[in-house]
Image (tube, rainbow over all chains, first blue to last red; front, side, top):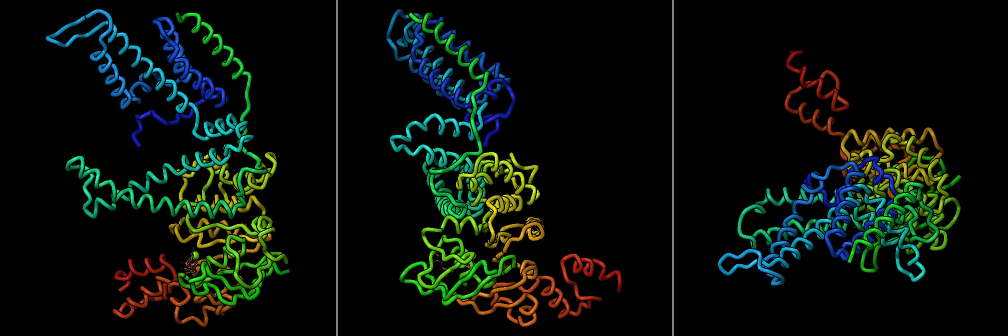
Length: 265
Length: 277
Ligand SMILES: Nc1ncnc2c1ncn2[C@@H]1O[C@H](COP(=O)(O)OP(=O)(O)OP(=O)(O)O)[C@@H](O)[C@H]1O
Ligand SMILES: [Mg+2]
């Protein structure tokens, strides 16, 4: 795994953001993601951007670390900016070069779309950066638990999620081993046409899948031996509890949202 | 007191197969430690899985603590007989050590305060108290197996079954496990059932059961067994490596002052060999 890539990574710490209950964070980020689509002028965008930067400041992580860490996303951000810049024919022409016309509408649209995208990525990676996968799973299980009334398999889903997360490093190691083993048998993953490289992935995936199934079988056996029989009657070691901090955070957040809706037009 | 009893047990995985186990009968006294040996495919793991109800025999009875294992009491049986499997990686359910031990307790609806106490106690017993918050990925194989043992011990079983629990570990990891088990034997009055291909583990048992093609062929003490053995391989054991090398070297004219019993002695013999001449 590339260590500079922040997407999906967790950086342990003791900042305010780390100490918030994962449910609070999850709900806030969820509403933020929706609200981004309601921003419609400079001021409302400005407020959301300031909020995002402020929370990054609160997390004690550096802004440049996060901006650098989402490098692959920058490609999409710039790409979507350019697409909107060149292919929107709204407003006045602000720049022209032998048939290539750039309209003011295109500039505005390009900027807003890419800003939206950037804000979404920044805030959601802030969630995973300050919340361990385990906490996120717990929060999801807790928040979704009312759905159990309608027979929605909340516990099973959470267990599946946590087991998958637990096995990601194991399978990554395995993939590494398999690719070395196959390379020593002459499978070439680095050179050749795109098509031949795609074919070369097959001898990696087949053994990986076979071993994953074998692991799954072993794990199921071990779980059964340890008395697993579904979510019913289970107690939980890890518990979530809201604190004074969560209350404060929610009040401030609601306050900011009210200002946001006042700034919109 | 008898804790495990097999009465004329027959088992096969499916109809088309021959019997994997044929007419198995034996009984184990509480507090004993038993080694089950036999070559690959002789049915050792099958016996282990029958004990805690992961498999059900087609004929015969299995009694745990005097009670017949049936579909109804399978959960109580699994509470009495815990099992550690071969692959350290594939039995680690929780994200961290603490969560993994909690898994079995959560399944049984143990209250949280009690869980915390038991986790601490069982981690202490296997010497992993400093690793409670570590993730599986950062543990060695031996450490993972110790966690697996702690997970079983937290459930407070009467029988601990180890199905080749050391076979995927390096010598250091294997020693860790053997020490841990010795420690547990002293601490708690538990019945141990060890399935192994490792000689040193066999010698630690009070009794050895030898399986051959699904039949129980020998049931004696390790000492008596070793006195009789001349075909190690048929037991799924390897003749001790150092003995083999020493014997081969002697064929080429080497003469050892004393017959080396372990790697270290053999090494010392070899590197000082020319000095002594
Ligand atoms: N799930 C299964 N389905 C069908 N046959 C099986 C299954 N598991 C094991 N067997 C067969 O049952 C026999 C006994 O298997 P078992 O796993 O008990 O052997 P073992 O003594 O534990 O061997 P090893 O030393 O390799 O672990 C073998 O012949 C094996 O092929
Ligand atoms: Mg086996």
